[in-house]
Every structure is written in structure tokens, then in C-alpha cells.
Length: 64
Image (cartoon, rainbow, N blue to C red):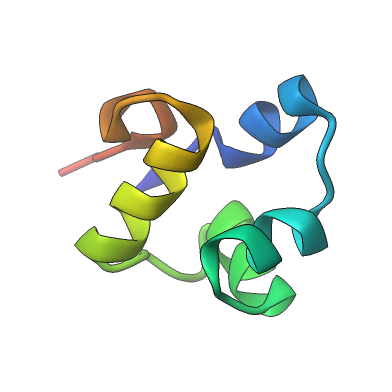
């Protein structure tokens, strides 16, 4: 899965730490998602999308 999470954070000018605190995960989780080393659960993907006021598909791109 690809992600546009880093771009979304840059557009809102927030740090990994700020995002992590806002959605209740660790900074390491955000780092792993951005690097593509970790695919978030559906619940976490919804929390991230809701935080940015976007749809899941706007942030995460599924590659079969």
C-alpha cells in the first residue's frame, strides 16, 4: 500500500509527533506508515483520514 500521509502532514504543517498525539498512536507508528513498513488497521486509517478531513482513498492507495 502506498500512502500520501507525509504530503497531507506537510499541507497542514504538522509534525509526526503532533499527528500521533492527535490520533492516539506513537510517533514510530506514523514513521512506519509513511515509510510503507506498516499498513494501518482500518480503524486507524479512518482516524487518520478523519483528522485530515479526507477519505481513506485520498491518503492510502491500495496496490494489489
